[in-house]
Image (cartoon, rainbow over all chains, first blue to last red; front, side, top):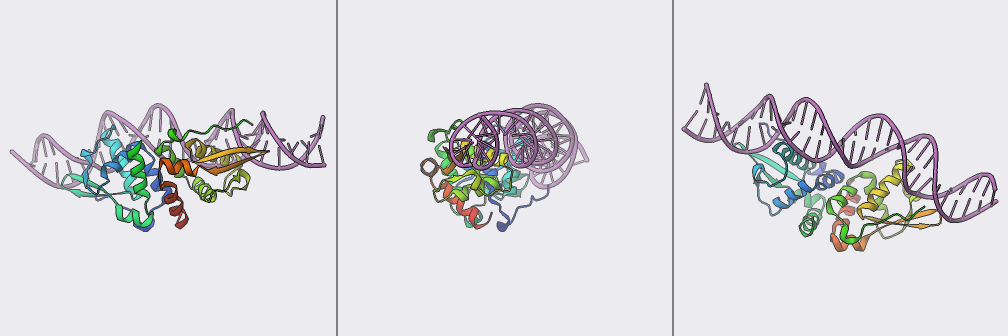
Amino acid sequence: MRVPSHPSTDALRLPEVLHALSDPVRLEIVCALDGGSEVACGHLEAPVSKSTLSHHLKVLRDAGVTRTRADGTQRLVSLRLEELEARFPGLLGCVVDGARRAI
Amino acid sequence: MRVPSHPSTDALRLPEVLHALSDPVRLEIVCALDGGSEVACGHLEAPVSKSTLSHHLKVLRDAGVTRTRADGTQRLVSLRLEELEARFPGLLGCVVDGARRAI
DNA sequence: CGCCTAGTTCGAAGCATCTAGAACTATAAT
DNA sequence: ATTATAGTTCTAGATGCTTCGAACTAGGCG
């Protein structure tokens, strides 16, 4: 399994980031990752099939919201907190707060 | 021309708001409205046709991002700053800041 | 090696989005 | 009343998104 590519911090595009965050399933994933922990794909709870979950993780990764690294047969996903904060200060915090209050 | 309907503050949904903000044309409109001014549709600069602009304004309005009121033959559009701030604190500010820096 | 586990990728269906032109509505001005 | 102005709505096409199952890839284990 080849290592997936991640956009550089400079390459992050706001419309793309917002679109990545605009889906309920992906918003839940982001909330689950908030706190900085690395989570294996399979441990993410989402009401979708494995392939759909993989697709959503790809959308988040391509937008630069998450990072994925291989660990054995698993893929560990985490938020790109520092990079997002550097490029769009406060955004992720507001979104997660808003999502936690009422999705 | 009948008055368009606006969702109540309670009815605002984060995924819908984020989706409304995830389009470059709409993001530009929101930036243009930031500051609190009311702007007539025709004075908004957007590289799209009149009907497409009308569509984008409807998406923003339906998501609860903007408010529209009639004034003669014109429609004045403005941001729902207070309501958005009450429901999703800081969000609009972060988005506008991010958009201004680099769209 | 053969098998299991963990994810990805492919193919396809169904639905939504963005876009524009044409037709329409409503207000204002002549 | 006629005409002009400002937007909306309808229709339609092209594209994109979400979803799933099936097939595939890669690493770990017996």
